[in-house]
Every structure is written in C-alpha cells, then in structure tokens.
Image 1 (cartoon, rainbow, N blue to C red):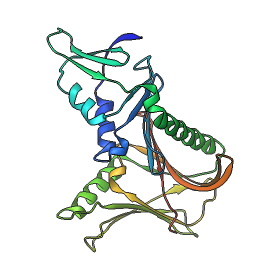
Image 2 (image 1 turned 45 degrees about the vertical axis):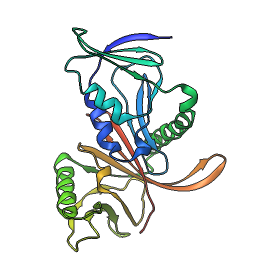
Image 3 (image 1 turned 90 degrees about the vertical axis):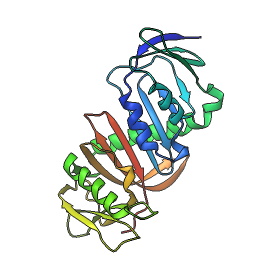
Amino acid sequence: MTSEKKKLDLSIFDTLKMFAGADKRLHKVWIEKDKIILNDPKIRSLMYTPEAPIFNSDFGISDLVKFSSMISLFDDLEIEIDIPNIVMRNSSNSQMMVFRTSTKPAFEPIIESNTKAKGIHDISYKLEEEGKHLEFELNHEIVSKIGKASSILSSGSAVKSIFRIEKDADCDDIKIIVTNEATENVFTQTVKSSNIGKIGKFSHSFNSDFILPGNWKVNVFDEVLNIGGREVPTVWCHMVDKESRLSLIIVYRNEG
C-alpha cells in the first residue's frame, strides 16, 4: 500500500473531461508519474505530460465523469492516495469523499492500449525529428473560429460538425474546412504549411469536437508502421500545445 498527500490542480481533469465528452470509451484514464492518458487507439489519444509528477503511484480511474464530479465538490482539495482508495479532503478536513481506483488487473487492457498510444506519440516525435512530416499551425484565433463555425453549423441539428484539412498535389497551402451535413453552408480558411517530408495530396476529416482550445502545432504523417510484426499504412495527425503540455493524436482515413 502506498500513501501520499497532494494538492490537486483540477484544470487538467476539466480538459480531459472536455476531450472525453459523452464517449464512454474515453472515460477510463491511466495515470503514471510522467503522464496522464486517455485513449481510443483506433481514433484518438490525448496525453498530458506534467512538468513535475502529480502522483507517484500508477493507478486507473474507471469513470472520469464521476471522479471529476467528486473533486468539483471541494474548494481547497487535498488528495491522499492509499491504493486502491483515493481519499479527498478539503484543507480543514471538514469534507471528505473516497474514490476507489481500479485494480491493475482490471486495467490491463487499457494499459496495453495506452502503451500503443504512447508508442504513436513517441513515433510522431521521432518522425518529426527525421523530417518526415508536414507541419502547420492552428493558433488560438483559428481554433476559436473553428469552434464558433462548428457551433453555428450544428445549431438546430442532431449531427456534429466535421472538421476537414485538405492539401492539393501542386500546392502546400492547407485548406481548413468546417461543414455539417444538415446545411449547405461551410466555413473555410487557408493556412501556410511547411512540407518538410514532401507529403502529397490529402483530405482528412474528423469530428470538430476533437479540436481542443489551444495554440497547436500540427504535424501530418503518412507512414508504413511495423505494428505487431506486420506493416500497416497509417495516416495520422499529431497536434502539440507546448503551453498546456498536451499531445493529441488523431488517426484518420486519407480521402484525397
């Protein structure tokens, strides 16, 4: 049994809950001293790497929404980890709640998935160092416009808006497009890219909700990866916000 007391910064859990949304596949969180990760390995993965360890214990949170709701009850939260329990108190000890962590055997599947997710984050950084990527920026202003356009286009509709990035074969400009199948209206904006890896034409779409607020450097990769001993053509987008220490992977199909 390990026990430790920590003052808890709630902001990262707000971000994780925003990213997970209603997708219950992302309501499981694996925590280690050097990372916190949510992962749906076939679609997307969000990894947070704290500047200093938040916890010194490895543990799983099986219900992010419940955990976030519990910690929101405390104005001045102190947290004590006594595996398998997380004891939440305020500094005056006048309030207390207990959250039970998942045991490691119960988390083996997500640990395995997170290993793969951590792998593709690491692979992305390595390919970036080798210059095998195309890069562009989605700054705070553009991300805000994407969010507003997404909301406007989905207003009154039961379907989510779609975010698409496109590049023609003979031009390295990136066209940013927000659409919604319930309307004929679209929002478009063009940004410059640096095509270091000489990546050709592509068109990639995913849910607009996947784009979190931030100042993102976006890298696009189109590589054949060795996964489980077999070669798999893989296309993905790696978004990094250094200020928030977030690394976001979105895997998608090339429609271009």
